Amino acid sequence: MKKHNFYAGPSILPEFTKEKTAEAVINFAGTGLSVMEVSHRSKEFVAVMEDARSLVKELLQVPEGYSVLFLQGGASLQFLMAPYNLMGKKAAYLNTGSWASKAIKEAKLFGEVAEVASSKDANFNYIPKNYEVPADADYFHITTNNTIFGTELLNDPNVNVPLVADMSSDIFSRPVDVSKYNLIYAGAQKNLGPSGATLVIVKDEALGKINRPIPTMLDYKVHIGQDSMFNTPSTLAVFGCLQTLLWLKNAGGVEAIEQVNKEKANFLYSELDRNKLFVPTVPDPEDRSRMNVTFVMAPDYTELEKDFLDFATSKGMMGIKGHRSIGGFRASLYNAMPVESVKALIETMQDFEKNK
Ligand SMILES: *Cc1c(COP(=O)(O)O)cnc(C)c1O
Image (tube, rainbow, N blue to C red):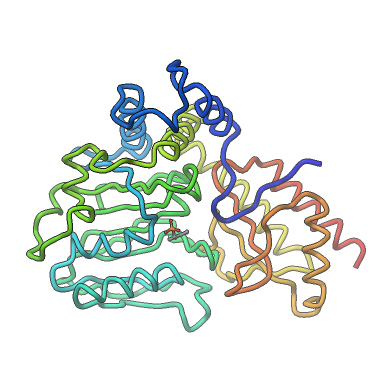
């Protein structure tokens, strides 16, 4: 039976990425060696790193004056590297969920954090609006897509300070105006590649303005100076990321994939609005994530939750169990997810409904 992969992360990757990576695990770039067993300083791997960094720039139209890095430690390490490198006395944060809260916790180690707004009052089921960002903040930190709670900030906010963003779960799903950001970071394992690599896009001019000493490994300038090779990069993961970037370019880039992502999300949200058994957890359509669609059983049908999970699993729907902090279900529809899989999930929901 065909498996449909709705896991939130690590998550679905293009067939192209898997096939090319499998080949390179055996014979990388004609070397007769595995990509896992050649030096990161070999000309073959240096080319992988350079191609990956330049494709990121091309696909996101990164302006001059920015550096692209592939680091390790996940988005979680960026929660502290960002304030370590960019926060003098004060930074502003928007609290839209568990990941944002974790970023705030780390930032508080470095200075004053202005939490400008939070949707915690409603278990993070909306994106706060009409907040004010203090003009003396060094940056305004946002989490563009809230993987756990199924909300997404679909535009680059207009504020009077530079933006810093955790884009772990929606990077490359739509165009962004990089010029508004001092820093963008993303763990690879949602929309880009295998776990183990972390993408960082940083504005060079924003660095070097902080008085505190920065440990070498946590200093963006060190990694920029060494072309992402200060220490051994996660070679296999970076290779996988490059394959996904090549696939995306071939698929027409971020504008083209955004149209597909919109279509997939519309299909599923329309079904959720129609099907009497289910309700989406995010009421305002404007705030609904295209990447992670969260839903629960309607109040009259809560006792069917386990039945639906078992039924869906028996139909090949993998990874739709919701995160423990909201329960219910979550269908992650990242770039690599084909429209057919979304349709298969919808059919499963309709089949289940017919018998109730
Ligand atoms: C998954 C996720 C993280 C955590 O990423 P790690 O790579 O595990 O550190 C952080 N932020 C968001 C938005 C995520 O989806």
